[in-house]
Image (cartoon, rainbow, N blue to C red; front, side):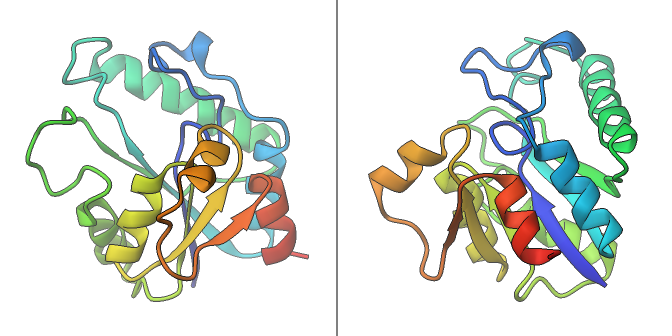
Length: 177
């Protein structure tokens, strides 16, 4: 099975420093839905791994997060793609959980649930924490320059072997020509 793990905010949809707090605030990045469709149609199993500290902060509840993800699933489906699963960490930045990126717990759980070794599996994200989590789990770190991606690249300190793409569409075009 070909597996790819995608961060959500800044990779699939437009990010917000105030958090995405409702389905109406969820807006796909141009080309991202088609990129997921392209990957899906080429036999990739697409999984999302996202930190969602807005839950711990009381900015939104589980029902709202589920509605946001339902909006995302429907939009991807309408573009001809499929997201196999969404994994998320609901904890605050300062919590000591193993699932919050940059820790690898969420990715290790994805590997376990999908019954896939993560070695070489692309972990695509726009923030250093996405890349660090991927590298710590043995996955292949991939930076997209959408969302916080340009700042992440400029700040340096990327894990060894990080690949860089303009956006999710450019990544998908390379994986599923």
